[in-house]
Amino acid sequence: MMLLELDLPLHARPGRRLQRSCRKKLFLASRKRKETPAIMAQHAVTDNAILASAARSRIGKNRFTDLQKFVTEKVDLEDLMRAECKLLGEGKYGTTFKATLENGVVFIVKRSKVENVAKTVFEERIEAIGAIEHELIVPLCGYYFSKDEQLLIYNYFGNGSLSSNLHGSRINKVEPAGWETRSAIALSSARAVAYIHSTNPKASHGNIKSSNILLTGSYEAHISEHGINTLVRTPASCITYNTAPEVKDMQNVSQKADVYSFGVLLLELLTGVSPCPTYSSEGHDLVAWDMAAPQEQRETRVLDQKLLKDNGMVEEMLQFLQLATQCCEKRPNLRPVMSEVVQKIEEIQSLIVGNRQPMWSSEEE
Image (cartoon, rainbow, N blue to C red):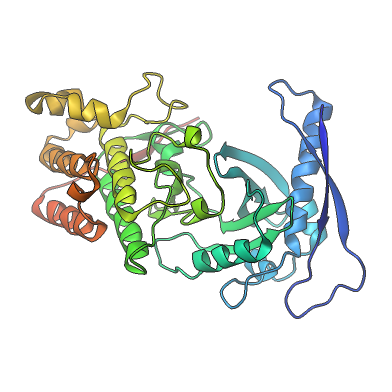
């Protein structure tokens, strides 16, 4: 097992000086498919130590809450060292952990893959991300920066991501059952992206996908990780399924490219198929699949068959499908802007009358 030694400084909170040197050495184990109990124990120690380094991280000027206040009124380094840490996933922008304190408080820590970026540049970008506040946007609550380690701290959402719920969660055993909540998630997500776009003509989310749509206990959708693409330079080979074809640099994603990614999200909601190979054994390119379906066969060939049981919603779903197709136009100038997408979704929903069935149902153990 290869170990990498990191020497991380632990910064004091604003307004408080450290009485003594607080430098801690962390050992990061390279992951293997098969792990012995000893290696798993090493990972647990490592992950908790990483979270501990964030306990006294430097919080951004004006915008960010004190991490101790965010977690609880009396959280210190030892609390985070004892936190139960669980790996949630790894992506092109970093590794995500769920941290549960002994008192039950839960938060999310994303370990970024930032390389060769000056601290001043990193903090400027973090400030820009933190400046965008909206009820449907997951706030960035704090961060930690050193040459070798960058951590981003977010609120935790009890029902996880849209991706894990839509495609079957091994933890919650939740199955998608109807259209109403999917439609509501689409509208909430569109409003969040439209707000980001409204703050600046060049402002974009940069990585719209179902795993970045987080759900509350009542399945209200909030969009997360806006602007994270500006922190990490992604090789062209890592540009993924949900990205507009004209995007060559993920650090420079236009608003029209966001619209394309939102169109892919709509297709995922409508078809029940993930464009991500991790979830989709068929390996569908959702955009190509949608475009290739004959107009008269789209209802039976494209839409999630589970949704067709609710006949009253078919017309709405077909209108959503048409909107998704417009968003996924190859030529950016033919795509609508996000404010128009929001308006169109609201119009579609207002035309539908009748009882709707809830989307989610939990199976018994």
